[in-house]
Image (cartoon, rainbow, N blue to C red; front, side, top):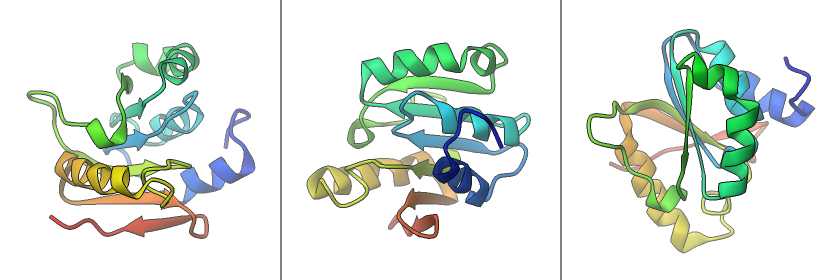
Length: 143
């Protein structure tokens, strides 16, 4: 896949049901390695990578500069439990998260809020995947 992805992250990206043209939301993007790999696989689609950490967003902004310039990737500093589509922003086809405490059970209160926010940002039939499966598991969202 890519020299900047760990074997684990490469397996996660490979397992996502990606195809050209998708709108993908990455929750907890860190320095942006997975977001870059996803952007490469969805052609004229778009990745919005979010993270609560200003430091992570700064690292991702540097690492993803080419994809940002090309319009295939954008970044937003926001926690999953506070995320909302901006005015006029199209919903997402797919969302994924790796090592996000609000979604892996470490922070259950934040998790409930985050799941509500993610469900609201996905189109009908949109899907959410998190790590912890083999290598992913799908979270079925209530709407």
